[in-house]
Image (cartoon, rainbow over all chains, first blue to last red; front, side, top):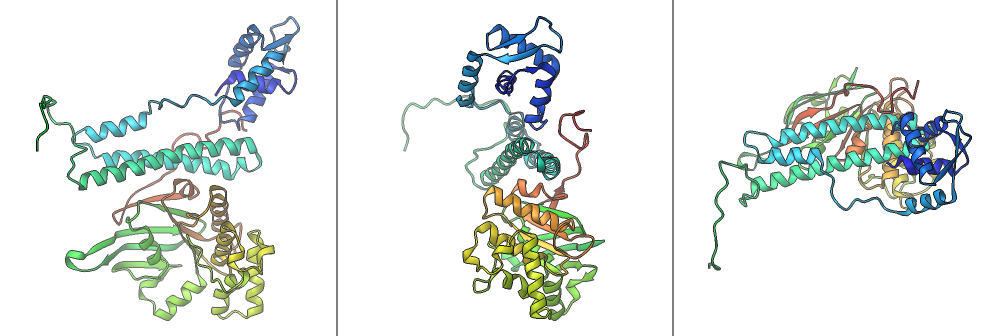
Length: 195
Length: 248
């Protein structure tokens, strides 16, 4: 989440004070991403240094109002249309745990998968209760909750798919997935094709 | 009160080498006003559990109670009455009768149960209206969208004095917005906010492999190889996931 650009977006509606920006940021993001006031002022200072916003008045106190500059508006327009970098997969802790569980002897990988699946579904139940309650009259919150539900859902689907793949591997004799045993074998050198 | 109770229910198909144990000593109790989701991969026994809970099939072993009555010991006639009067079913493919209008589809089980046609029609229209389908009551299923068809099926499942709602992948054929609408309606019927028997709401069992749907349930049980292997419990920590201190 780019706080910098979210603040520019709020300022594109007109001049605002720091505290006001924090409140509006949280309201617009359905209060899913909390923001501390220090973060707001630090970000505003940087935006001002870069010429993207300007402030009115000399004080550095809460009464100082900020407004967006022309180059701030241009920066915002570019940011909105620029896809975030999703090209390299994130280092996902849950994926790592399952990959490790598959390799470790004496570990029931299905039990590991189920522990994660149960937790994810419990978390989704909490989000769904929010959707059913608070988010019914709050469009921003409903959108943010949907995003979180789809994200968690994709992880549950991955666990389902991983489990199905592991089961298939266990019933075929490809030996594709075997727990690591003892030291790694020395790589055999092959000198030519064999019949 | 438990509206549905399965006690050590097993279901075995075939004999000897071809024997398949679809359910293996499954116990489950669902109270009025409670929605339970059953999750599991294909072949885990989800649909068998639902057909046995709905008295469409008999268990090989164990006991099934609906509204405290032992279904396993009922005559065929009593079971049929229980299915018409107390249990509502929602299926992935809607199972509406193509030659009947939406209202006729909904009123049919009431009429079969002996309700005069005019009264049954009024109850059907009321149920359709509750689910936002007043305008569609005279339409035939092939004139309705998928989401509307499933809402007709839900009306049919909650109309009258139904106490137990059983759903098998109810939104499997729908896009995510319609799927959410269907789950919301079933959730509301279960909580007594719409349709269903007056008062405490219905007990509901929803079979699905979809975690987003399952997350509407009060409790999610996980089925694997015919056994209940796990279930959700409320998470420790704050009730709301929203930023603390912002809502009071």
